[in-house]
Length: 276
Ligand SMILES: [Mg+2]
Image 1: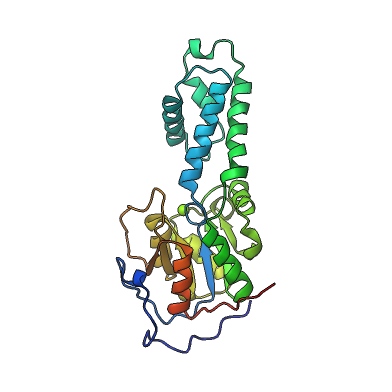
Image 2 (image 1 turned 90 degrees about the vertical axis):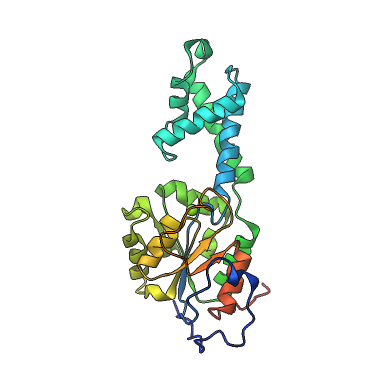
């Protein structure tokens, strides 16, 4: 990968300030030569929280359609308890959910069929509703085609599950496939700063010249700060927007349109727009 030329200016003099720069924390890094950006996936590239609720409710609705006599809201809350107790990446949520139903509720049902019905309903929700934010797609495409920045992923989760998201979101063509770091594959979990260090070292990049964009101030912003990366808190939506910060992010954005302003105004990243 060709490094970007130096920005040529270490001050903000003369540049227009966007309103978001004054939000919460002032930016602190104005002279880094940016060479790469790593992104979180969940609640950064798409609305994971909203999608997950929709898919889980669809699976409960399917169980009801298959004749299970449960209340939709109570069923959803029970499923959320299962997920909280066994983790979101556990593979047997619906089996555990059925374990918790009464004998009378389960009588006459084939449990394997119910589990399959719930799983199918969950997965079918993906094809309609697992979509990247429009400004995310536009920004990644612009950065991929119009700059020499290394674009990668640092994400927490299982290898195929996280990879599937990159495929369904349609973002994988804009990423360097060697720059996809999934905790399950790497063997280092968030928020261990070694994960972020590993990503920078893989490309022989000084962390000071690499940005990390994520929605979780504890799992994304803080470890990125610990290794000296440029940290960007994507404070858009999801369950982490009100978490306290262990260390302040270098920048706060609400969407990727603001990220593009940030890249242009502070890091002089001015993508060449191609018409093809
Ligand atoms: Mg996230």
